[in-house]
Length: 468
Image 1 (tube, rainbow, N blue to C red):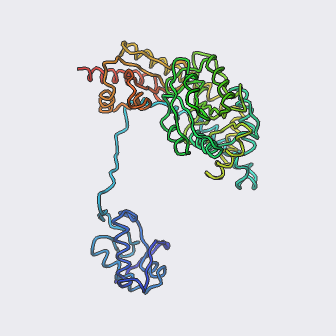
Image 2: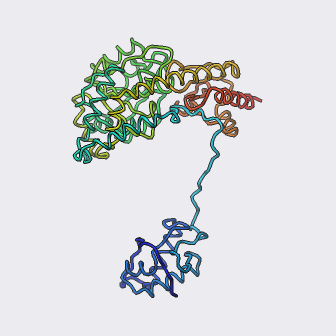
Image 3: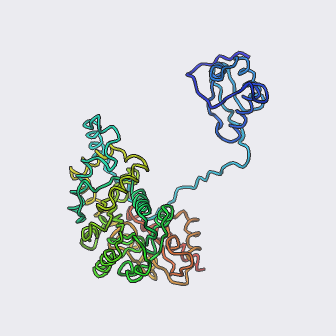
């Protein structure tokens, strides 16, 4: 069978051996069948021409032609004169196919902790990115300092000191690929230094608990109340470190009180422990003055962690740690092991972005916008669900909506999903056996005020439907 096969050569992971059982042609056929059945070669995927395949395997072209002819007869390959051979569109995968769910997009998306990425300052960021690409040195296109680009660490030290009261120098800042990586690096460094237990606020991000566990640390929950983390209970844990969100507890929304700050710092000194301060959205504040970072009061015992995920966009994957001197080398070493550094071109871009004041301008614009959306949410809940209590609204990107004890939280979740409303509840954060009032977490950052009102109306109808 002669085929007029044109196009560039394509490599394929196939091998044959004259010592192996079966003819060379049969070996080719078996490997193609297996790759197609198991999904390594998917329907429509191009494969080498018979000439290319024969060259790659060191066999005669006739062997390749005969093997392709057999595979085409069985429906695995599609062969056409003058066209590149490819896997047949009807080729079936063996076994149970992987189900791909294609949920319709929600009509109202109240999922929390996501900023309005549609407002991302594209032109300003592009200007900074162009500046970075134009001026980056050949040396900086290499790996460089694993802690990060010096220009960015300098800009961050200035920005964090000015805006958050963080005590930092370029030398003790480590640039990371977001907060999650930063937490993992610190936990791994603590475990390597002999730490055994890390306390965390309860409720908290479930991922933080898993991160500590994977680093070899025992995660220990400590309850929060209206004043923040219960330091009296923290003392009973015998923990070597604690992860806290003092400026705006996630997900409850309270601020760590002044009295609790004093107690926490005293515990850190007495225990010779480390606090990891997650300052995830302190810039989004509406009804109160900014609360300075805990790190500024005890820089030798507090690791300060931040990122761009809540201020600009999660897609940038840039975060930072301000690390106490005693822990700095260990964290930097963990960063080397993790990935040998965060993207340096993007770091140069962020440095320019900060120095030109673009982040400050963006945050000022967004505070006005987010406050209007938060107010729309509060007003809509008061109208549609007057029996609900709204909490955690002074800052951040979400509010808690506490419903009467008689409501069924899981039934509400199922009902709103059927109505194409997406949200989270406190069931995702409390321990499974912890009975609390049904509480919805409603993020308001991504939606306009009219959309928020319509979405809350739909949620209220769903709640009432579960009560019928």
